[in-house]
Amino acid sequence: RGVNLRVAVIGGQAVAAAEIRRPMLRGDGRSTIQALLETLNADPRRGSWRRPALTSLDQIETEDLEARLAASNLSLQQVPAPGQELEISFEELEVIDRSDELHGHWLALAAEAARLLGVDVAGVDLMGPAEELFGSPKGEDGLTRLLEINALPALHLHALPTQGKARPVFEAFVAYCLQMPGAPPVRADVMV
Image 1 (tube, rainbow, N blue to C red):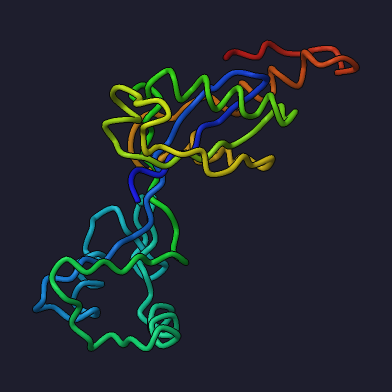
Image 2 (image 1 turned 180 degrees about the vertical axis):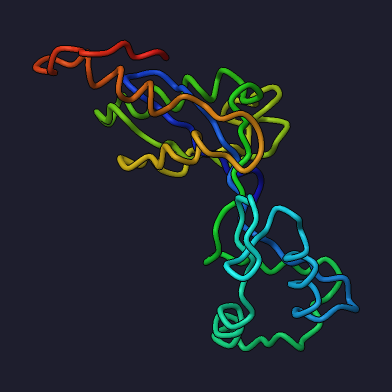
């Protein structure tokens, strides 16, 4: 457990970092899963096709959740224990820009990991305690781990976060591609 981060690496440089959160229902010992879902969907950032809004998160449909719960022998009428967490892993993510907060050690580690695998454009996933990721790294004694290196980096996560500053990752990607040998001549300025 801990903070789940995706670091975008383009051309050997870590250019953005985002915290990835899945929707979570937390039991209070009184409310049913249905009631917890209604509270989650009451978040003003959540919209639906029936209730259009300028939102970045979809409402979670009851029918979708019912089928997933049934597979785990749960139902919308059950009351989770206090503190019990039910991650809604099939639902869209909340993405929080952490580019300015992530310790430089982890940015360098992400860039080096991508380089070692020969991946020019990567999404490097890290997970660890917030105090290590955003504060002081603990080295080999720490709990932060590099989970995976993705050759399909999902750059849109950094360009369109649900919270925080949008990062110019697409611009950085285009600029990187245009400086490669054999790239076509630049016909317009690319600002990064």
